[in-house]
Length: 286
Image (tube, rainbow, N blue to C red; front, top):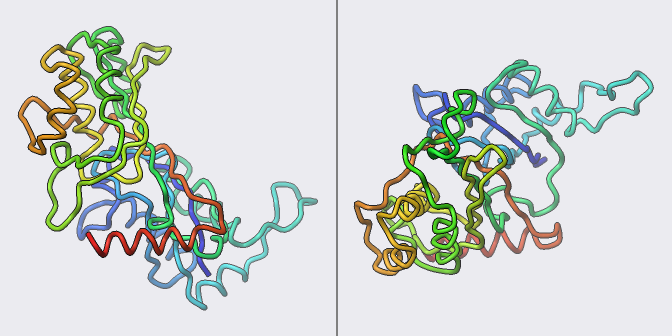
């Protein structure tokens, strides 16, 4: 039985998504909670591994349950909020049971659980991921209540120039200049959307959507736009840097605190298995 989990977390006090010996991770925390509810040694597969300090509002993962875990899942009858409500599907009830284990004010939660459609793979079936980056410049000012999810830059930034620079990067390209290199990992990505706006509180918000992201890509792209907003780079420079393929000192990788994974996109259920197979084949070739 494969279960889909929709997850959110404040990444401030996690050392990233992936389980690491002796370190607190989102994966480790959730797998321990699942083990308390269902037993066994659960292993989550996630849509996008976030780095230390990065947040998520719309993370997606799946887990495959063995026979013993399925038995524990269905053994406990579940009802809705009111006594007259019909019984809840055991897979859907799992989210509430996990929230009970995680605690009322936990920095990670499971919004929803459900039986995964046939062919669903949280990682390989995904067709895009969307991130948001929040940036407070001198126009916005510093808000201590937002410090865990907003990066501060002590400069007045030109959002129009930043938006123009961001849009110039959209498309299928090699983003090696904006990624931390990993051995045998491709840096070719399709950047589907990249734009900037000022929110009602004056904070600059980047919308970044791609088929996938390489290591530190979003934070480096944001850093390039900040250089443009400060006047250290011209709009045309960010695409020229990308096409040259080399990292440059003018592009800083900004802090993780401003970055949130907001959404993951999947095709229609009938196409999930084909998408997963296609993605696996491409990764094998890379």
